[in-house]
Length: 212
Length: 150
Image (cartoon, rainbow over all chains, first blue to last red; front, side):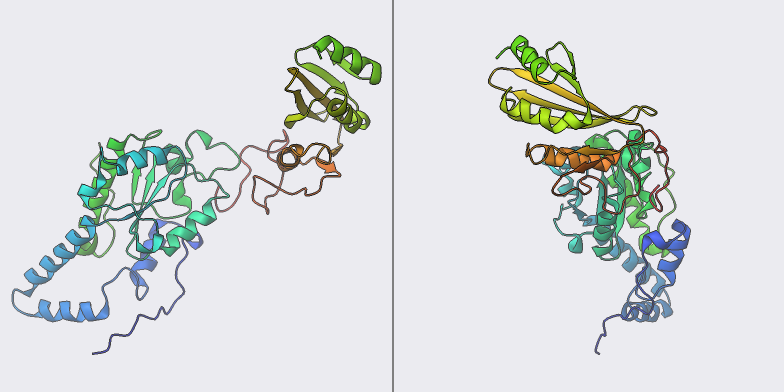
């Protein structure tokens, strides 16, 4: 059986054209080739699901894929400001995110996670969007530090984006100025918990009530 | 050269300039004497090092351009200031004289909208090319919207 590459029927959605996160999620769930299984995978899954007791297999398969996804989240090495120093410390041997399966990767095309570590200026925002658009689905974004969360101390400046969620959708916010590596690790663990629920529900997990 | 000698030299050449005793030697000039004084500071006072150039927005009295040049051998620093006057945003450029003034004047143009006449390449240096307005002017609102980012 020949597997055709998916043809996008509607143009790839660009985050800044959307009103809010809900609209973005809706489009992502509706668009073909978006946040869905491949057609082959879906037909196989539905076939198995038809058998008596087959749902056990499909749920197990989902759990397996989720486990695989959350166990190899590769963040793109992308540092913006002083938070990047803490991010580098987290990547280095003392805190060692590699035991969580994270490999800082120097290409957005192989990466699953973007850690926005630092102030996003209006001049930098188009480049950040471009790097985010180059990452393959499924992808996640983590906003690190006060500046990326809300603009931080530069919120009332003339040149700073008031929170990176105005540019790209964000899954986990890590507070701090800058957040120490422990905070970032906590955020990464929360993100892994979110990813563990990713396919089972068919959409992104609700905000995690668990707070540090 | 000492500060006293420098002050005497400046007083002899530029009588109209207001000189405050240093260090550093602060010289307030008219815009016409801006480039001649810079030439004088480079040749006679041997201030070869262009330290910085910036501007101040004094609201109604207008913009003031401030530059500092240093004589590193004799440790003499000269701060030169000029008031452009209310509503005026053109100033002669020091870039043909000091290479270091090039980017500094581009920054002052970027932030204050001062047009330096005679500058070889006057365009924005820090802000994006399509930016509207000059953000360090007092008349620039702090929360000026910049859709879709703020």
